[in-house]
Amino acid sequence: MKKAQVVFVLGGPGSGKGTQCVRIVENYGYTHLSAGDLLRAERSREGSEFGQLIDNHIKDGKIVPFEITIKLLKKAMEETRKLDEKKIHFLIDGFPRNEENLQGWTTIMDGEADVNFVLFFDCSNEVCINRCVERGKSSGRTDDNRASLEKRIQTYLQSTRPVISLYEKQGKVRTVDASCGVDKVFANVKTILDKEI
Ligand code: UDP
Ligand code: MG
Picture (cartoon, rainbow, N blue to C red):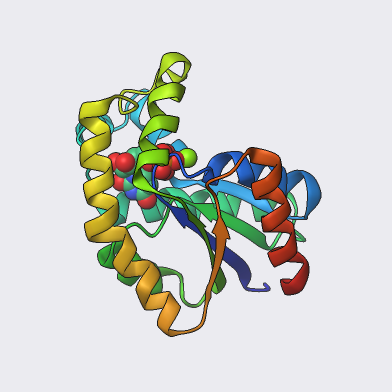
């Protein structure tokens, strides 16, 4: 079986990762897997042994142990490929969030997937917070409130930025200015993706 080809999509909470991934899927042949969405689905799955743990971590803006997240990602990738073996291009959104995530991924997935590059949605913390507070009015998410957001931003700065820096050293980061409106950001994304494909 061909190795999966992966793009990691990173950026602060509310930087537009999920929104832009939907656009990318519409225009390019990628499958979108959001680590956060997979964790939220696992949280509410009947009989899950991790529901409470995931719930607590998400509310506190903390990073769920990598074994759980990677297992969900791996399963989702396998299910996609079982349905259609041609689907080898994946956007993995919101992962890896810290160095343990990355190490776990390398150990578990190295034989099965290549990381092509990191798509990094860059915008200020202020923009991130305002967007999530706005989203919180309708998202129903337990972490789109100011208290959780302070923690999510801290986690992002302390844990996720170093992962982006590691990839930067390998020349694998493609940075998108994510501070403008959805259409403009997507135009920036297209410029990048058209060069890669
Ligand atoms: N999360 C995690 N590991 C991951 C992805 C998400 O622990 O690989 C948890 C973490 O608590 C994070 C929350 O899920 O704050 C929401 O993540 P999501 O990517 O959905 O948020 P976004 O960055 O899109 O606002
Ligand atoms: Mg998201």
